[in-house]
Amino acid sequence: MPTSTISTRHGQMAYLSIGHGRPFVLLHGNTMTAASQEKLARRFIDEYRVVCVDLLGHGRSARPLHLFSRDYFRLQGEAVADLLTGLFANEQVIVFGMSAGGVAALNAACHCQDRIAALVIDSSFSYIGVETLIAHREGMEYLSPSWEHYLRNQHGHDWWPQLKTGLLDTIGQLAETMDSVTPCLAAIRAPTLIFQGGQDPFSHESQGREMAMTIPNAKLIYDPEAGHILSWRDPGRFRNTVREFLHEQLVLWS
Image (tube, rainbow, N blue to C red):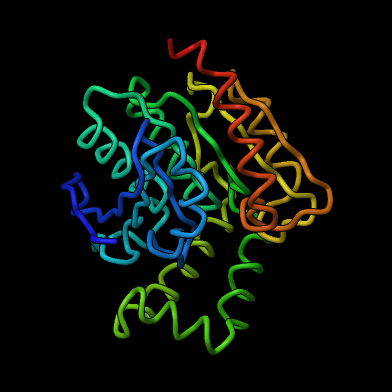
């Protein structure tokens, strides 16, 4: 798929677009890219125009000088908000974010409430716990050679080592304080569907429950046996659950 770009306050963001219909924006997690989500995106193109975005520092998007800092998730949210406002000035958008992409989606929602029709959040977190840091470290350390090769090609051979180091430094800084990385949850107005696995090494199971209790119009889907990112574990079931939720919200959009 051809890549397009749009300007944000933190530089260019790259995105891919597939399908037709109501806009459905997909935000990947740390170390992934828009292109890596194409297979998942195709599960939604029967009803939606899916826009897969490269987060800042990933793929073909900008690499702001101070991205890898305690402001990492704030910057991501601001850039996503600018993208939504720039691409969809007169439309309401469904935004689906997984892991770190979910954090970016939640933060973006507070900058452009009128642009977001609904949020779908998969395996995200409102603070960085020790478990998140450990899971990131182990995930980087034990990448298979084939997956390492794939990600290096996705991000660029020179940038990939810097991305890994920068992300680990960032997660380490945030784990020291455990401050909220989603400070405006209570202000989010959009209906929000939250997926949380009980065996997620990146996010304690209580995080999904706490987010669902804080966001005024949120619904939690909890799977005690699931690990990180439920949309990958059982994509068919995930698609059906999301479809049912979004169709329920059509009354609110009409």
